[in-house]
Amino acid sequence: MYLNGYYYKPIIYIDENLNLKKSTISIRRILIIYGNNKRETVYIYPSFAVKYCPFPLKDIQYIYTQCISKNIEPFDKIDDPDKIIESSASYENWIYRIEKTLQKMKFQEKWAKHFFEFFYKLIDTKSTNSYLNDSLLMIQAFVNELNLKIPFLNFLSYANYQLPFQ
Image 1 (cartoon, rainbow, N blue to C red):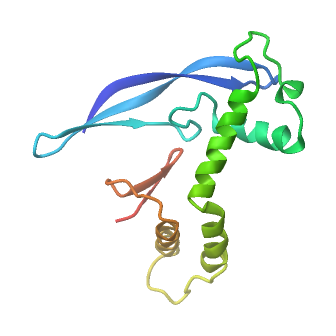
Image 2: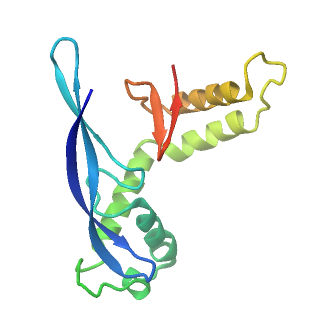
């Protein structure tokens, strides 16, 4: 595995003054060379970035919860002094795409089915494993039940935390 530079992605975000700003974030590129000389390039995105989406997830959530779900035009709450985007349609399109993806995956059904099953059962206190190990096993079972794909390196990553599933 070799660090192979960066890919620079433009991102449009809402600053603390509720103004739209444009910036560039770096996406780490890694080259993996397998034993049979097969090469694969992997991009490591930060937890707030979606692959092709120009907006961070927290902004999409803000636009959805504070504007779209309340039938308020997003530009009534945020300003775009630099005229970065023409209308709120691009936000609405990404919200629609994310919603359709979650519906297609039946995420809410799976979450409702397994929520009580995994988070409201008591961990066996007489177990010989540590509490952390039992918790990791419970999270691994939950991830498997939701049919989430664990990468080939057997880590499920979120922000700066990595949970090993080996």
